[in-house]
Every structure is written in structure tokens, then in C-alpha cells.
Image (cartoon, rainbow, N blue to C red; front, side):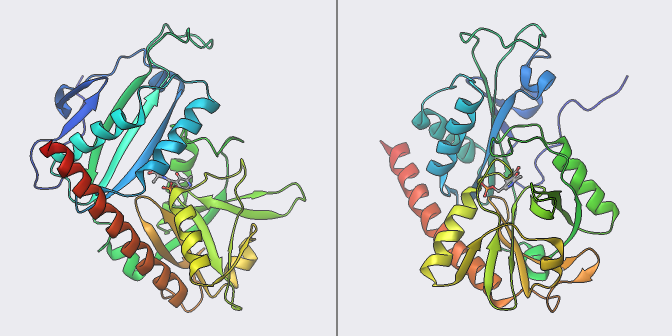
Length: 316
Ligand code: PDD
């Protein structure tokens, strides 16, 4: 039997990829997780994706806070203090010479005999992390805009918890790909029976009406409470733009002037096609472009400050 146990080296031209597994830094090809890890067997784990620009973390305190919230919701023991986890993220960034991209981290309920019962609270959680180099700022998709296709939202009812159960989201994306789109907008009927967009397969979704009103679903168990969403909504307010946090229908999206998505790995990215037809005039809209520029400016400033802090600490 031949198989590839580990992904090929990071496509960036950096040094051999170093990952973190339960207290140790190791080359990716040597890093091991138990077959009995509950993250692997049950999807019993949570994760965070933090963006990195110019070697510094963006909005990482908010990611740490959401990690705590996900862990507490599922009674998964904490793998360490925020400062320890952040130090590990910074070590990974340094060891992989990551300039732009993301740090992924995952905490599972640890290793135990396979059983639907949770193991005792003394079972140590597993913490793994790795970096991924990615062009976030000069992403060509952000220039032309995403084509999205609507697909049914087949996920569970606690989407506010950032669990590793990503098969429905991954499947949704592949259905969208099969329909010729780049990504999925997931759709489901609310209590009133009307179908509305929940979010993208790995991002929060927004439209801008022809009256210039920005619409996005309010926070609830139906969506992930995006860290980028929070920051972008602050920018929307600071800019005096019109915002209503309410879910929108596919028909409203079809009639919109602009649309965009937000996430740590894509920032603000325009949506320019919906279900095979141009959205608005089929080009990234002015409000979307302005929000992307403002978010990049803010993220850059934060990342620079974080990189400085990190360098100062390393020099201590
Ligand atoms: N995804 N909604 C879903 C379903 C997500 O998976 C994500 C993030 C978001 C945006 O959240 P944030 O702004 O905090 O990144 C919304 C990450 C990037 C991922 O799974 O890779």
C-alpha cells in the first residue's frame, strides 16, 4: 500500500516546514498524531485561523478569545494560557520564516479509547499548529472578485462554535465548484420558512443594496461570529456607512449592487457573480473596495506592531 502520510512541503521558498504537535516543534514529515485522537475519530476539536502580514499576527487576541469560547462551549480542557499559545504561534512564524499567510491551530479533546463518552477531564487535550504561506493582499481573486453559487446549508445547529467538523462546508464548496463557481453561499429556511443566505463555506457574507445599505446576517448560532466581521463592522460604522444586521434572501442578493465576504484568510473579498450571473455590474463595487483597503490598512498596522512586540520579546 502506498500513501502520502503528510502533505508535500509548503510551496513557498522557505525552509523545511516546521509544525507544532503537543509541546514539540518538528519537521512536518516527522510530526505524529495518535490514531486514537478524538479530533481524528470524532471531529471532537476546535480550531482558529489567524492571519499573518509582514511576519506579525492580526487581531490575534480576538482569535484567542473565540478559541476560549469554543473550548468552553464543548467542555474541552484548555491546552494552555493565551500567552503560551501566542508564543508558540510566534515561534512557528519565525521558524517557517512566514511573511504573509495564516497560522492554523487546532485543539482536540485528546487521545482516548474510542467511545461516544467523553474521556475524563484529566485527559490532556491535543494542540497542533502549522503555518501556511498565502498571498492575502495581492490575491488575484480579490481583484476580479469571487463567483459564488448557492447550495443548501447542511451543517449542524451550533455554527457559532468553530469546530473541525468541516465536511459539510467542504462539500458545499465542491458543489459550488462543480457548478463553475469559486465558493458556496449556503442557504437555509429560517423559522418563517423563507430561505436566506447563512454564510460562505469559510467566510461571512454581505450584500450592498442599490440604496447603499450593507446587509449581513446577525450573530446567532446559525453562523460563525467572524473576527474579521467584527473588525469590518467597526470600519463600516466609522465610515458612516448604512448597515442592517439582517439575513438576506438569494433574490435580494441577485438584485444587489455589490457583495463581499470576510475571513481571516481572505480579508474583504468582493463577490462579483452569483449562480452564474453577474452581481451588480459584475466588477468589485466601490463600497467593497473601500472596506478592503481600510481593513488592509488596519491589519497592516496591527501586524507591524505585533511583529515589533515579538522581535522585542525575542531580544529579551
Ligand atoms: N474560516 N464563517 C465560517 C463558516 C468560517 O469558517 C470562517 C473562517 C468565517 C470567518 O471568520 P474569521 O473572520 O474569524 O476568519 C466565517 C477560516 C478562515 C477557515 O476555516 O479557514
